[in-house]
Every structure is written in structure tokens, then in C-alpha cells.
Image (cartoon, rainbow, N blue to C red; front, top):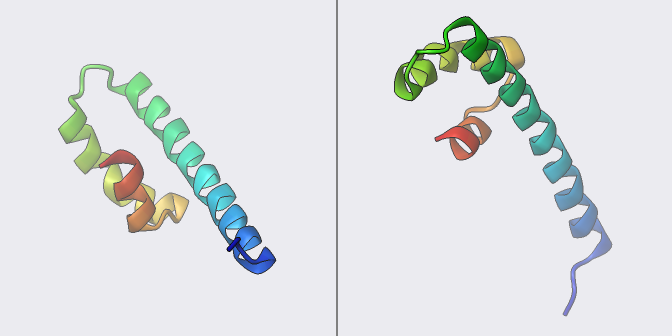
Length: 68
């Protein structure tokens, strides 16, 4: 048994959306690292979490799976 066309495209579009959100997070992290290069990973995580969720509209689920 294979996948239905509907399921295939739904998954495909969801993966594209997640990749775009991950790219936003990645660019934001790079910018933060340029400002504060010696900041540790855990402290950086706690500092940018509210900013990411608010400014970029990143869903928490994706945020935790990609960075957590």
C-alpha cells in the first residue's frame, strides 16, 4: 500500500513550511552570535526563546524539535 496523493502533498508542504521556519531561526541565531559571541548555548537559548516566539511567529513545537 502506498500513500494517497493528498497525504503526500500535505506532508510535502508541511516539510517546506518547517524548513522555512528553521531557516528563520538559523539566521536569527547567527545574528545573535555576532552580537554576543561568548554567550553560552543554554543562556542564548533562554534569551532568544521569547523573541523567536513573538517576533518570528515560530511555533513552540518546531522550536523545540529543531533546537532543543
